[in-house]
Length: 230
Image 1 (cartoon, rainbow, N blue to C red):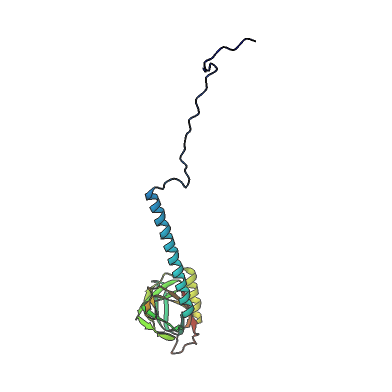
Image 2: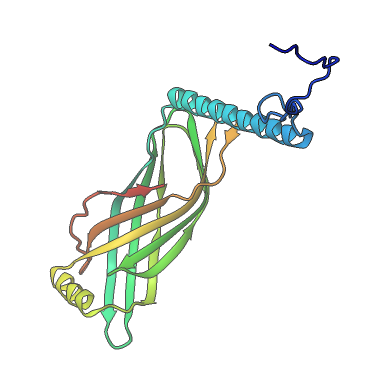
């Protein structure tokens, strides 16, 4: 076997490729830096939400405590008496000539709640049509108190009744008893200790039957309770 030639430390084989270049990618995870404006905005939103949520809880707790302490009861309205001395409808000019006087009571059963009646408008309605209205004097009603109202409707009013309502009027005239509705539109404030609430606008509806007085004689009027809508 022939001796190998002297290579003098040199390498004459295929070329060796260079080592691969390492690349580094910045992670998008928690290691990245946050934009200061974005971080501040997120922090403010979180704080505002926490404050609002806390305030809602506090308001709810206060409302619950007040309800448990005060135990508010619904105010009750009644028509205790009604006197009708005239109720004539003219089909010629669609006018009602009327004379109606009412006694109404308002019962406040609450021990710790007073009521300011800042405005009271009484409306008289027949056949779904208003024929008269009256503004009553404002007043304050104390705890566990009964107040009396005296709305009086007298005069004439234009009322456009349909055929059905005209037929009902004829029947009621023959019977001598009329179905009339009175609505009270109010603006009130509640007084709880030294606290006064904002104005509330309840609506009270009273439907009743009233006999017509004839020759100084009248039928018996039945006390009627009213419907209260807050």
